[in-house]
Length: 61
Image 1 (cartoon, rainbow, N blue to C red):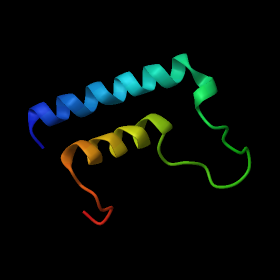
Image 2 (cartoon, rainbow, N blue to C red):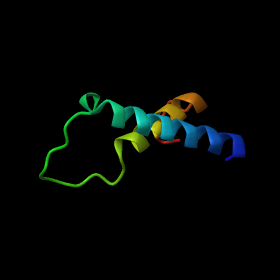
Image 3 (spheres, rainbow, N blue to C red):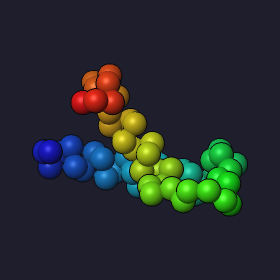
Image 4 (cartoon, one colour):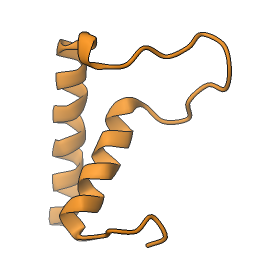
């Protein structure tokens, strides 16, 4: 990864995390039972947006 790409990913994560914290009604409720998530909603959204920005249309890439 480039330094610019790292900076973009970090800024995107921070912004997403702040927006989700400011608007908790937008986050779907997590069940109390079952498997605990290994990543946060902000991390998942950051990965999805970065995948789209880089043009990866397949999860295999």
